Structures are given as structure tokens and as C-alpha cells.
Length: 160
Length: 389
Image 1 (spheres, rainbow over the protein chains, first blue to last red):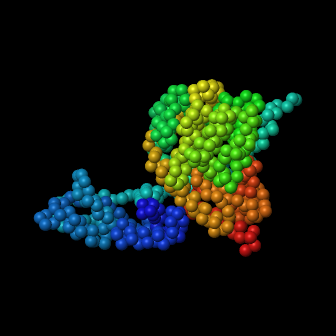
Image 2: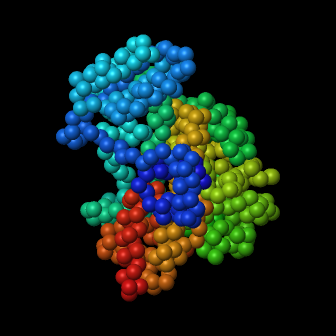
Image 3: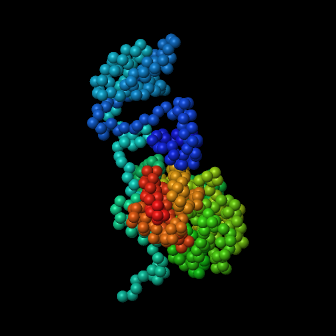
């Protein structure tokens, strides 16, 4: 049941428990318990909203920063990551395989603000060797959802 | 001037669906639960293969029977999924949708006066195709008490010395009925005893719900040599517009079907065939995902019907429910028309699929949850009004 619950709410976290239970052919109580259990186990870590900020008047700049680091004695990747992800403007931090170590996704009000974060906060960290900052120009698809076009049912109304 | 028309074609009534379609089309802002096709787009990797074949300039005819690579994949697929084995060079033909396969199978097998047993309610094409092929269509009226399955009793009742072909439309459009192995075994026994042939339209085979998977009648002992198995890409892979299906049959039948296809069609669309190769090879996950999604909505609809006291047997296949409206004392036509006029919801009257569909509606769940909710809310309002609530 867990996988099925997750598959539905990953796409629609606002579905009510009652509908979800009907879709899955389970009782409401069972579904509610399972979700509560998954929240406790940190399988479900939050319920966020997918916002296309481009359609608002809000200015947002999103940057993807490649970070190379040298892990220091007594301080592995996890510790360095923590130093980075604690900043509230940091949206995501991933440890990567390949040419660099961390992907840091950062949200700021302007390019200047992002640049400032990189030069004032990220680069000076002792373990950080280098950074490369890429700004997002346009989001086409995010979290499996296409942002730029609207779905229209173009099927004929009645077909055999 | 002489009458330009053939008497045979003039006497065939137009599809009951068509009539209703014309009414619905004139109504603006109607919401529909009336389609017989998936609400998914064809998975991108399949579309991409079609596009690539165009880019490569593969715009030629294919062999009459279809691309050999595709026939090999169909062979593999049927063996893997249903345990039936058809020879890629002798027993498989790629057609323009399952519909063409129905037509050419009937034309290849029927002589004037041969009787074709057509269990109903069922897809709209069997009867006209039988008639066009010179046969005589004999409906078998299936009933809700049998979960709209074909029972041995009902079959035996309609067999005469002239009976040649039995149509097996399962999983069924419009009822959603399925035939499990034990039911098929009973039918197969009678088919052998009476020396009949079977046209098994299994276009919805992938959309079978519950623990038990679809069973093809062709996989039962002694049945392959008596069966024309029809399937296609429209429903399982959400490829209705590509117009691609296939038929598998013993060489002696297939050879004649191929002849008709050769003269009438030449070959199925080449672009679609290239895309279909990928569909057969790489779509198991997509199909699982779509099946699960239909299954969820199937439960949702059944639950909603229960709440509004609209009786409905549990369909285990395809993407239709077939609720009964008998308690309202209206015909299916009246009910569907009033529902359309008063609440602007389009569903298909059961009678579009044969007389035994009287008292029922076909309600499709190939829609988003949001659309279903809106439509069900309106249906509930309508039903409550009829109930005087």
C-alpha cells in the first residue's frame, strides 16, 4: 500500500484521505495510519507546493552551483554539507558522483544576492576548493510537471 | 437514374454512438464520460520512434503483413504475456486498428448465410461487419446476473447447423466483463463439439484488473487452430490515433485475410509500425502505470455509484462501467438524453451496443479524477432529482 500511496500523493499531496482510500480500495483509517507512519519514519518529509514563479510578479533567481570540496580530518562530506544546507537560502544540496562533489541549488531575489552568497558564505568555507555558478533561465518542467503548457482534452466527446 | 446504392449497405443502421455524438456535439460546455479511448498520451519514447522513422525518411510501404521486425515483436509479446505462439511469417498480420482485423477476418471466413454469434452488449462493429461479409449476425443477449459473461447455456441456445463463427469480445466494451480461464474452458469445449471458429477480440487484454491476468482463448488446448486472435495498440499503449492493430490466426485463415488486406489496404501506416516496435519492446512499465491508474479510477466510480444508489456490477476489464438505470423506469436513451440536457453530462446509452444494453449506460473512466468528480457530482444531482430528493 505504501508505494501506491506515495505514487498518488507525490503528484497530488492535497488529495483528501477519503478519495485516496477509495482510489486504493483501502479504508480511510488504514490509509491515514500508513501516512502518519511514513511521516514518522521520514519517508514523507513534507508537503510542498509547485509554484511557477515566472507567472507571478515576484522576482526570483535560481542558481545551480557546482561545489568542489576537500573533506578534512574528522569532517566528512556530511559535515561539510551541513555547513552549506543550514543556510535558509539554500534550497537543495546533493552529494554527487563525477567531476564535482556537491550540487547546491540556491534561491535568491537577484543575481547580485546569489553572487554575494557564493563569495561571502560559500567560497570562504575552509573545505571549499572551487565553485561554478549556473543561473536558471527558464523552467520547463519541474517535479515531473510541465510548467509551460496547459493540458487540454482534445478527444472527441463520444467515441465507440 | 438508377439507385446508386447497395441494398445491403443501406439496410445497415448507422452506429448508435454516432447518433448520440451528433446531439452531444451541438451542446457547448457539456462534459463527457463518453469516450472509448485512453486519456493518456502515447508514451513519449513510442512517439519519438515514430518521429525518428519520419526523420529517417521511412515513408515507404511495408510488406502487406507489416514490418517483419514488428511481427517478430508481436510474436514475442504474445508468447511472453499470454503463452500463445504465432509464427511471425505465416500467422500474424498487422492491420489498421483492431477494426480492420474484425472486418477482414469475417470476410475471410464467412459464406452467405453463415451465422455469426455476437454476444451483446459489445463493440459496435461485429454485427455490421458480419452482414457486410454476407453472414447472418445472431446476437446472444448477455445478462448482468452472469456478470455479462457468455455462459454455456446461452451459447448452446443459439447454435444452429448454420453457425460458423463465435465472436468473443472480452474484456468487454461496454460492460467491462472478463472471462476467466474456467469460463473460457467451458466455451472452448462447446466450440470444439460444434466445430465452430472463434473471433477473439482481446483489444483490452492489458486492462484486466485484480489478481488474475487476462487469459487468451487461443492459449487453451485445441483452440489455436480455431481462433482468430485480434489485438492492437490503441488501448494498452494509448495509441488510438495511430490506427494499428493485428490479427493472429492459423495460416490457412491468415493467408486469405492477407489477400483482402493486400487489395483493400496494402499495408498499415509505416510510421505507426515503427513506433509500435518500440511499444512492444519497451513499455511494460508504462502499461503497468496506466493500468494502475485506470484501476484506481474504476474503484472511484464504483464507489460513487454506490453512494448515489446507482446499481453497477463490478467490471474487471477495459475502462468502462455499466451501471443499471432500470429502477428509474426510463429507457437508456431517455436517461442519457435527459442527463445531457439537464446536467450537461454525456454518457453513452447501453443500447448503442445492442438491444440487451437497454437499461444501462456506458460510463467511461478514462478521465482525470478532477473531471470524474465534476461529472459524478452532476450525475448524483440528477439521480437525486429523479429520486425526489
